[in-house]
Amino acid sequence: MSRVVQIGVIERLNAFIEISDNGVGISERNIKDIFSPFYTTKPVGQGTGLGLFICYRIVTEELSGAIDVRSSNEGTIFRITLPSAAKREDSTDNLLLQA
Image (cartoon, rainbow, N blue to C red; front, side):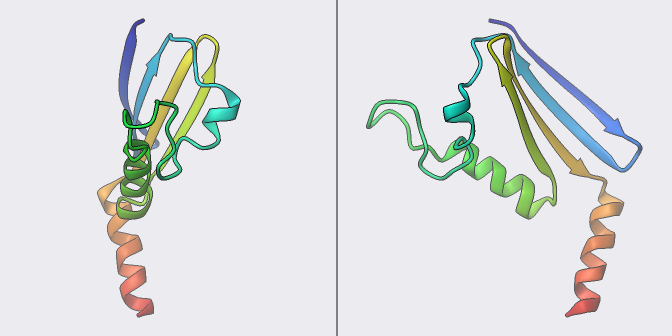
């Protein structure tokens, strides 16, 4: 199985990191729950099910970004999108003005 990591910028407003592989993919049954706390496909005692949940919370709540996942029987792609620092500062200023 090979893995690819790409980094880029979208219209100078967002940056992205894309991690992909060419494995067997994640089933539709599992993909809907992968960001849920304590969700794991591993046997009891071999996984906490917190890794993707923690990543999702950090990216979406702390960094105002997004995580998207696409999967098929040809592999899986995770894409993390983060706003530019200037864009985050603008949204922080708006929150301070509303308080």
